[in-house]
Length: 243
Image (cartoon, rainbow, N blue to C red; front, side, top):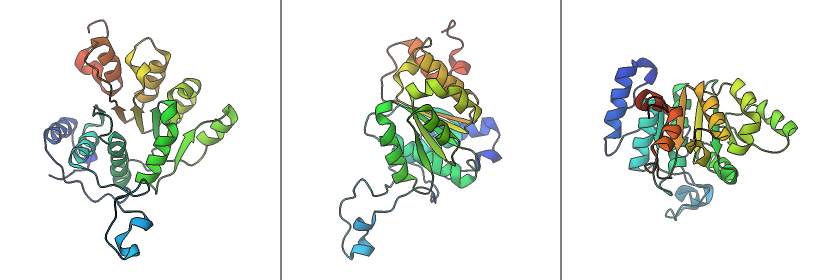
């Protein structure tokens, strides 16, 4: 299988292709110029003149089968949810999607906002710098004046905690990010939550929206409805009242 340019596909064709990819056991992604799959200098067998030793946290990664399928599916689908278990590499799949979008020109000049738990803010920045070293990744943190300066800087990817998003959602919405990624933001599960409202408002104008979660969603239909709303859940489930 190959990965077509989604801009050349009508929506029904694109969604049908996404479904075929979802059912695949593997997917042969094109070589991604923007994704780092190389070892760090200390683990480079050529530079060290010896066999490659186990990689470290500074080395790039080679996407595994399920990750390649996830990247291709997200690219074709446009809006989607990845519900893999903890430790299966959801961050790498998100980074792979950004690498594909950068390579196809979707992110020129579009930008990306990633909303996560505050505790995961710097972990996201570190991982993205590892996977996508040629992109400028910034964290939205600090006092209001500092954050305002960051928003006006020349970043490709902005990572923000969901609590800080509540303060700055209007500013970020005005920046019109092309891609919004939401990682394990538990308040998104509840329709009446202010954080859920802020996330959905930010995602509403984005061309692509990705929800990443390792939390079981089958316990409550209304929670599932709220989580899926930013990625097109209303089209499938109808309104909250109907649900």
